[in-house]
Amino acid sequence: MKTEEQQIIENLNLKPHPEGGFFRETYRTPIFVAGKNLPESFGGRRNLSTSILFFLPAGNFSAFHRLRQDEVWYFHHGKGPVLHCIYPDNTYKKITLGPGIEHNQYPQFEIPANTLFAAQTIQNYALVGCLATPGFDFADLDMPPAAQLIKEFPDHQQIIKTLTRT
Image 1: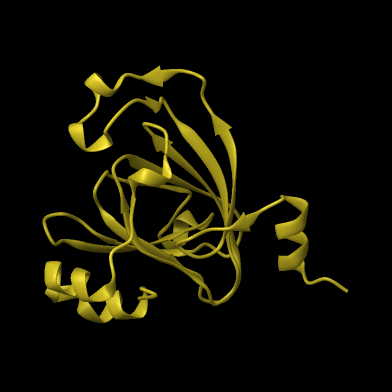
Image 2 (image 1 turned 90 degrees about the horizontal axis):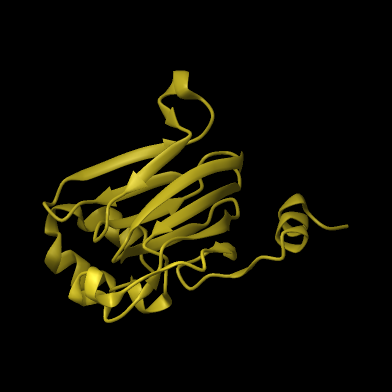
C-alpha cells in the first residue's frame, strides 16, 4: 500500500528536484523577455513567467539557494513549510506558509531575486506552487556550498549548516 506522500508524487507526476523535494513544471508562458531587457546576469532571453508544483515530504528540506528572478510561493496542501530567507543586506526572515492567517501563516509569500532561501517541513508534507518572473531556467539556480554561504553570511551559520547538503 502506498503512502499518501507516494500517491501525491505519483498522481502529480513529480520528479526529484536538485535542491530537495519533488516538482513538475505546470506552466511556461510562450511570451519571452528579450535578453537586452533583463540584467546582464541572465545571459539571454527568458520566458515571461513559469510555474511549478513543489512537494516537500515530511522532515525534508529544500536547500539554501538563490534565483536571479523573483519567486512567489503559494500554499496548496498539507502542513505549510517554513521558509528561511537571508536577504542581500544580511537580514533574516522566517515565515510559515499555510492557511492559518490567524496563526501568522502566509497563504503566499514573495521572495525577491538574489535572496538566499530554503524551505523545510517540520511535522508533515507540504505541497506548494512557485511562480518565477521572469521565467525560471536552471542556469538561474545558484546553490553554493555551506562554507561559501557562511563566509558570505557569518551571522547565519547555524541555519545555513542545517539547511545545506554540501
